[in-house]
Length: 203
Image (cartoon, rainbow, N blue to C red):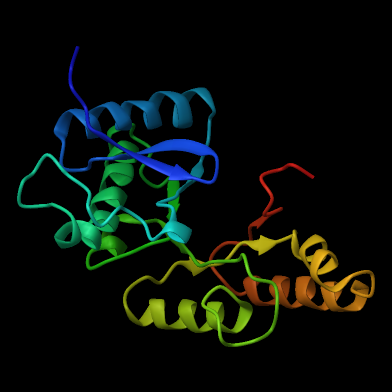
């Protein structure tokens, strides 16, 4: 019967909610989910605390429990409050030093709470005109370090060959191998060496 606040958010064909980190009941409920389902039941040591970066994060017109934190005024601060909720769950579970989480957005004091930051990995080329590609990722990791986000990395996107094949046809073997190898070489010198297929496991 306790009221919590979730902001409905649409992504592709899926419905999901965004937690209101200014609502004490909502954060208490969500921390219990992390402690019971993630840390205890799944025995996870880390997780990606995603804030939907491809959709710009929390909505600009979001309504929050704290009236001083509404809409645009709270858009950037959401990242640090979200990180704090996840960090508090780890502390309350007695897993400090034994568990961490990854965030893909940050602001102000996020570094104080976040275990690791992740940059985008969804564009597959060597050009320098997009924020999600290899060269920009390296710049982001270095600049993030100067801003206090010292544990930066980027997942190795193993969907690169499939994405290149769909856009370039069949002559992509050497190109995709080079991209994957360069991605691995770069992330070998970052905090975390992590892979994913980039297509939600569908293939």
